[in-house]
Image (cartoon, rainbow, N blue to C red; front, side, top):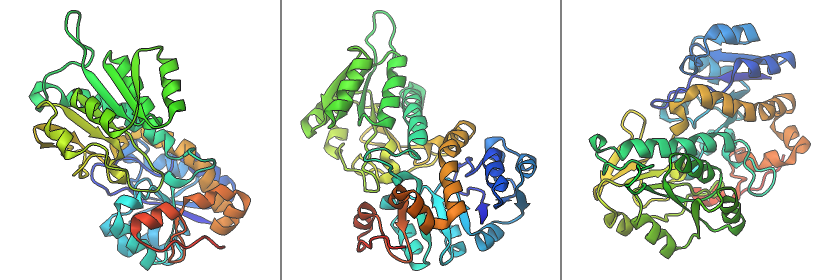
Length: 368
């Protein structure tokens, strides 16, 4: 199979869909890998490293999209790439179609077979290709939030860890999954006063156990969320429903009553956000202010640390790239059935139920 890796063109996105190690794995199995010139430079991976691993460098994205059997990316295609997509192309990347209605329509109209990293689910709740980027984003959320709490950036001027004689900053994390657990880890490490909310009591019990009472765990319901948000200096939204739009848990009414200069970092913005009225931002202009509260809503947070993120992501994706390359989509599903959970679009239909509901499109079960 010919596998193509284009350069990412989303604003301030420096990751790349494959490392030289991944190229070596695929070429050793007889596959051809073509990389767009300069695709890895943002992750400090020059073309020469890909060539040494067995890839062929091509000068244009048109050649990648036009000749590859499978395109491997990091982020979802954006408008300039839509005309390059073609019927029966296998696209393997993050798609986040619940928050990308236009892309969903393009994939369906053009007959692209889209397999999404974020919905591959070997067992219920296990999302191995989302996990590495969720870990990065969760840690970055607290780092970004702490920065924007500084007064010169418009924040209320709170140091999360405080100092002796001064109370610590208050951090609320909504959702205790991978993003939330990593946000909690960073916030505790900075010495903040941390509250985490989740609907899974086992998750709360686990966090309570490993932090031995250093975090407050609360069952997530509207009243608990409201109380915690109003008391917080920093709120981290870390809610995920695989393939579906994130529920709106932080309302405009809550935001109006938060202290001026507080910060909200919504990591679930790539699935529409759990904050009412949230809209995605980019690294070159990451925040906006509503009711005197700073909103940090970058949809590709890990793109700011591409060296770390590229390796973390491709360590997880390469075995699936290999499976798809070795067998093709249909036979790969036959060999490893849970790959079916990653199929968001197939031959003009939507096999993933939550994605179909988010797009308002009929659900079309996968049939090879």
